[in-house]
Length: 393
Image 1 (cartoon, rainbow, N blue to C red):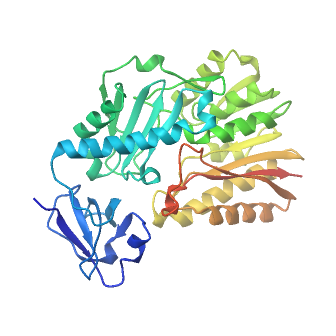
Image 2 (image 1 turned 30 degrees about the vertical axis):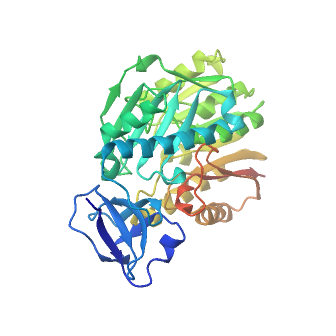
Image 3 (image 1 turned 120 degrees about the horizontal axis):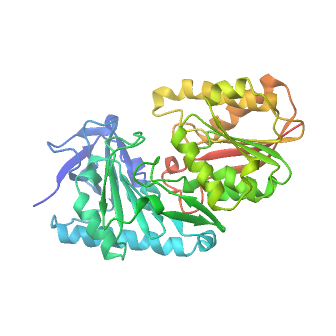
């Protein structure tokens, strides 16, 4: 059995030859009659086989390539279990080279296209793998992933099937279930209670590890506002770094409860930690007190390209309020995790916010995702987290 052929229009093969894994609908000359998630062979208009990928004719991204080259593969499931298991092994080898991961028990094992594995995210917490399957091509192979991960020694798995990549949460399935409610992740000597089953994404935002550590180094003797705090990652680092007081701001009661627990399990001074349950936009606009350090780490405002303009307005608004209200000589840690907001656009947005407020602002650091979220040099979209650390006079 041969894979069905997806044929590109004349001249549209350049991005594939440059190893970009996404094929958009406008580049396709012929789409085979196939089910969403089927594997297809990708050909140029001149009949050159370019690679193999997952098809989804109903998506703007018609095909996601996971293998470049003219190799023909067998359809047998056993072959593909070995194929993906080898990719998981390669990803694990890379993580073992990262010095930062020696100081904790949680890390990103698979970063989708960043690891040449489109449509799958896998984070490890204390040996438990929390997996998100994001596209039909990975969702339809649920059982295969279990075998591939188990083959690499990962036995305890939680698999969540996301019907689209922007979905915040869905039901999932445990394989060799641990006690989820008592799962503790560690990084740099700090502990975090992780709710894989009912929390956001895979349970915690591992991508901010390096940025949390940096904040801790600046927090001493400062009053800190952690806006969009979720489970209080930045709050824990701030108090551990000697902050005078920390306010965790979020609209979610369950997230704030996690933040409260994380302060407690790290034996940090609870009297210095204040829970604020309120809409972050409203709070920032009418800030009752002034802070020396503000963290803005909101969820993705731009879920698709059509939402970029509205998202830009949202990012500008919260940055304007923070820059306007922060104490003189204050520090602003501001981030965007929206795939569709580029690093250049985010910097322009923050520049616009600073210019409109009229305060003197200097950039101290450019921030990105932690190294266990590698960026595929051929796929710039795998760099989704971008941030700035600003000194506001």
